[in-house]
Image 1 (tube, rainbow, N blue to C red):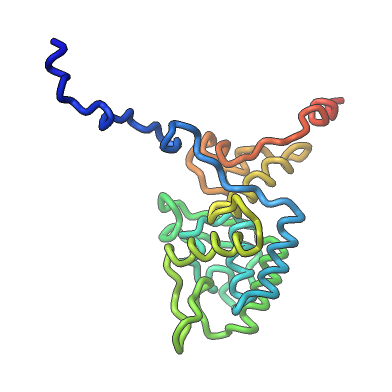
Image 2: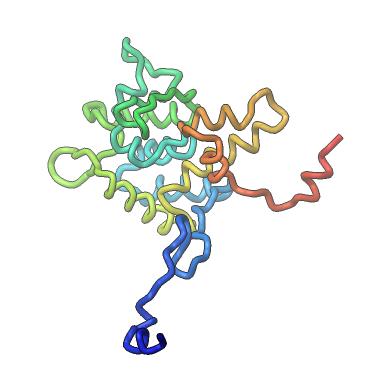
Length: 220
């Protein structure tokens, strides 16, 4: 039977890739989780090198302090952050129409998002959407591809390597999970805020700690 395979180019045969793995079968690297120092560096870069810092700051904050997906940010309206009387809402509302899986969720508004929103409205009072392009005479709503590329480029220029458009959301979920320790909240609450249908999906976003000795030593 050996002659059957004589003319077969075995180099063209490839093992099927496992989901979540790279070309060599190794796990794909996850987006970097931002530290407090990273956040300071990022904020300074936006303030000094951005052509529209008020818009860009709000977009980034919605990923870091509300855990929004990039697709949700690019479709979010200013009205989603306001109450019916025009005042700022205490929540970030992700409409079912723009949320993954058509599952609406409401996230308490972080003070940094609120402050950034005030500045956004002050400098862009007539722009109805959060993510917009500055090219051309009129602001144009930013596409998913454009916003994804912008965030990746932003981190690169701020010398925050290993980051991607997923960095803000992963930072939000990881920080919530770590802060849940010692509080009345749990990973189920993190799952709800992240908008995940399954808890194991939320767990994949959570970064591991570095000093396990201190972690174990914290037990009383």
